Length: 363
Image 1 (cartoon, rainbow, N blue to C red):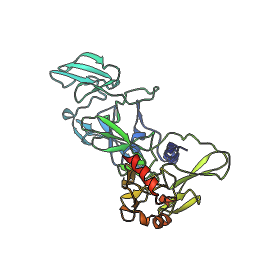
Image 2 (image 1 turned 45 degrees about the horizontal axis):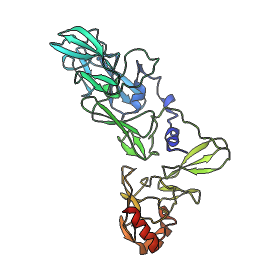
Image 3 (image 1 turned 45 degrees about the vertical axis):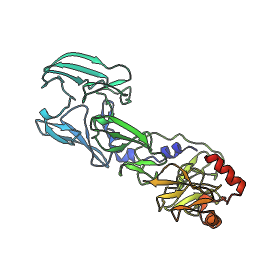
Image 4 (image 1 turned 30 degrees about the horizontal axis):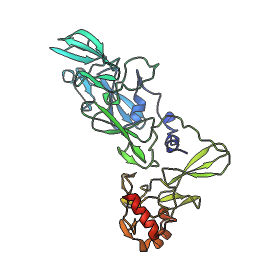
């Protein structure tokens, strides 16, 4: 069972019934983008400079600026139209310009118009693999936002055309993915390595955090099984497991502070549980450094930040990692430690030959 199955399984089934019909502006699904940001964030429109959307727990609320004002999505407020760089809904995107300028074609993220004063004097398109950036008035390398091929109307260049800068926000196709917009409207993205991106906190965190993956709208790909009652641990989340209902696996979550024990096939206290190798033991961890699941020497550990595991490190020869001490300790204490700490179940003090071999591997 893949970790992606978990992420896709935790869907917000209530989302479709709780929210009204999706608000669409061409390829821009305003309702979906609102689920990617914190409540209270305002999103720009790509149909008009005269209004914007306030994201609430029940969906986007359309709000209009006063006459003579336009919405500046970067500052999250309405300003005098002459002070706002906005081209949506304008018959003449060169209106009010002086000198030579290049402005975007809002219906094509690769397109541009050349302005000679306040008149359109030319138009064109960026090369394949590039898009037009209005801030620098030039073509830059980057992809246009993937759009519904059947959508009519303006095209969303990227999320940073409507989402304000300097915030982290989630994705609707993967619970681990996050986006970030810089002040120039450049969009970057990455994934939380072993956990979910939590929209309400703007950080990586546990995938069983309330509402963590509600924004994920893709239907899960079912993982079939035939033997009812068979249990499988989740490979990445220590506190989750699956039970076969006779045709497919269903996700179950252990109570707070417990992990799924692969030997006892049930949820028990985090420290005592023997979890599956490779799962993230930062979940519910009371301290920043934790044991990795290590049935050989118990000398592997990593640092936790916001529920996300860091790079695995190892203690030196003749020592193991003691999570309670938050330090490497002498191997003489390993047998007693193994009895009380399931992450190291099966680990033992190596004999001299094993120690020499391990030393060679790390050299």
